Every structure is written in structure tokens, then in C-alpha cells.
Amino acid sequence: MPLPTIPSGNVASALGGGFKVANSCRFDRGSNPHMTKTQSDGDRDKWTYSCWFKLGSTFGAIRYLLTAKTDGSNYVTIEMDSANRIRFGNLVAGSYNGFKKTNEYWRDVGAWMHIVCVYDSENANAAHRMRVYINGTEITSWATDTATTLNQDSAMNYSSADVRVGNLDGESSWWDGYMAEVCLVDGSALAPTSFGEFDTDGSPTIWKPIDVSGLTFGTNGFYLDFEDSSNLGNDANGGTDLTETNLDATDSATDTPTNNFCTLNPLFKSGAFTSSTGAVVLSQGNCHLAEATHAVVCGTMGVTRGKWYWEVKMNGNDYPFGVLGTEPAGNASHSYNDSTAYGIYIESSGGNTITAGNWSGSAIYTGNATYMIAIDVDNNKLWCGKDGSWTGDPAAGSGNSVTLGTHEYAPWFHSAGTAGDNSASVNFGGCAAFTVSSSNSDGNGYGNFEYAVPSGFFSLCTKNLAEYG
Image (tube, rainbow, N blue to C red; front, side):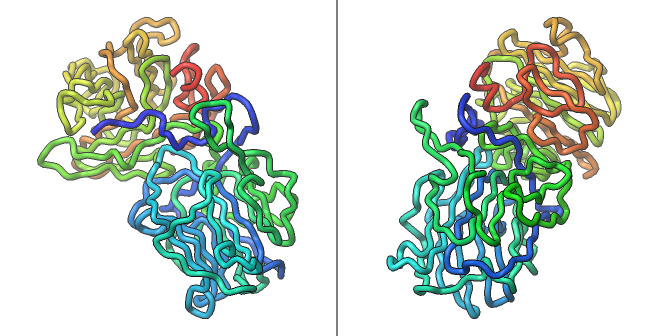
């Protein structure tokens, strides 16, 4: 099973110019995160929603982006359904008066996507009363398409219905993943060009964000830019802030649609041996992995050149990690025996090194700690460090822990324990799954790391990949 390199859906993330999105917010489904705002009476017949999002690990369950609910029979929802289709519905008196469900299934966990939903029940054209755009292009073919009645009120912008970001009141279907540049515009039916534009300088043409601060957001509208980590619900338009529940500064991310960071790939999980069907359980925006017996997960980005850095906080003593060739040659299960596997194996009895699937008994490291990984793909070298100290010197290119082969590599983790008490938290720089007490970025100013990034090494993000990858 080949691994992905930079996904094609990465809107704007490798562009050098234009508007920069500084922050996003991570919604970890297991924590029941959401934001709420009490509405006053506004325009219930005309409004526009815009959001950039990146999927987490949840599949097979509903996840709400935006909702407004009067009661159990009257609400508006914008969501991903259990099959990863986008749904936009207006429930009135227990029945949908306007409902759209896409034919397409949206499963790209490595890319940022942009959605615009327009509700305009005053429109004489029934087909234009509810509209959905993905990455600047309108969806016109639907698996389900129920028209909205002319001048039908919605629960949005209604004083008896709170608006929620990331959940529907009374249900346990929280969003899982990231959101950025969340906008609700009360009283206007806007085209996607109010929130983004196509960049025609590159190839292929891509959809990118633009500055929305000049929009008129109306009575209940808001703009969430997530730039204040101490107040993620801050309305950057100056209106009443949203109230956060189970969200805090640790959920502030620099993984954004204009600089997409590597995360772990929930679509690439396999038992490491043919007798096992285990799969790593991911959470925290695909940056935390819990133990499953002999199972593997890899990163969403692969590299063929350059120097790269990331961190891993270990909880337990039975985890190999490092890099894996994106076309594994020696073992279709992608285990530590694969001939393209390189890294270290943390065990209570001592840490082995792994070179081309072969183990060495050298006790390099052991125990719970924050480990650092630096790889130099140009010179076929991998270094491992522990709690700020390196074996060797990555910046000088000396004393590497492992010598790599010649492959395209992606970050790789193999959950090898059986006791169920091992886990690992990964930090690729965009949003750590553990608390970062210091703040270190790479030489380009990207990433947020616990320890200093070695000189000449960079975080795995699309800005850096465009320059060095």
C-alpha cells in the first residue's frame, strides 16, 4: 500500500505570496469540544457560512461543523455524515424543508478544504435557495436534494436558537479535526469569492484564502481566526465572543490552509503481522496514537530530499519509530522487519536501532521521554535524541544513529506492545499532542517544538516542502 506525498487537495498551502492564515483550532472529538453563541433575531432567510477544515481520524460517525437548534424538531445542520459525505439540512417541524447530501465522499485527511454554504430562501430560483461550494466550485449533483420552500425561516439567526460550532446541542457528534477562518454572515448570500480565490500563477490552479476582515457580518455573524490562544472563541469582527467548551490554548494550531503540516494518516493503518488485524487508534488531530497490538501508522507527507525534524513523546516501552519507505519492499505489513524501515525501538530492556528492518542490540535509549528525530535524506542519515540531548550532532552531520537507504520516506510508528498501556504523542510542529513548555521554531520560523531544531533542519510542512522537499 503506497503512502501519499503532499496531497493534491492542499489548497494554497505551498504558495509563497498572498493572504496568510496564521492559526487554526483543533477539535479533538474525544474531548467533546464545541463553541456556543446566543443569537438575537436577525435574518433567518438569508445567511452564509464559510469554513476551512482538515479531517481528523473519525470515520463512520456524524461530525457537525455548524448548527443552530430551536428544539428537537427545528434546527439547521452543516455536517459530515457517517459515510464522509457533506450534508446541509434545514429541519422544520420535524421534517426537512431543504436538505442536500453530496454524491462525493470526502476522505482526504492530509489536505485542507474550504466549504461555503448559502441559505437564501427568498431566492425565486428554488435551486439557489440552498447552495454548497467546495474549494470555490459549486456542487450541482446531489445524492439527495430536497428544495427549500420560498421564504422559509431557518433556526439560524433566531433568538430562540443558539448557534454552535463543532456540535449539535443534545447530540454526541462532535467535530473531529481542524477548523480555520470560520465565518457566519447574517443577512447576505455571498459567493465563495468573498472568502477565497483561485491562484492562476501555479500549476495546478488552486483555491486559496483571502482576507475577510472587511466583510459585513450582520447582527449574529462572527469571524473566528483563532489567533488568540487564550480566547479561541474570540470574534475577530468585534462582536460577542463564542463560549468555548473543552477547548484551550493547547488546541491552538499553526497547521493552516496556507501552511499544511504533516499529521498521522488514519487511512494508513495495518496489522504488522498477517495474524493481526490491530489498528492504531488516533486522536488529537491525528497526532496521538494509542496502542493496538502490532499495528502501524505513517505520516501524511513523504520526502525524497532535504533535512527534517519532529518530536515524539513516549508513554510506555514498546514502540519502534522512525521512517518507512513509501513503497515498502520487504514486508507488505510495513512492520519493523520491513527492509525500508529505519529508526529506533524503545523497550524497557534497552533501545534497539533498526536499519533496513534489521535490529541492532545497541541500547541507545529507553524509557518514557520526549524523543527527537532528525533525518537527512540527502546524505542518508537519521539521528535520535532524548529530552534535548542528541546522540551525535545533526547540525554538523556527524554521529548519526542510523544510516538510511535510498527511498522516499514518511514518518513511521509501529505499536508493538500487547499490554494496552503504550501510547505516543507526536509533534510535527503544527499542533502538538502534548504540552509544549518552550517555543522553538525551525530556521524559517515554522513549527512549535519543545526542543531546538538543529540548524539546517526543518519541520514537515508544505511551505518547507515547497522549498526543500
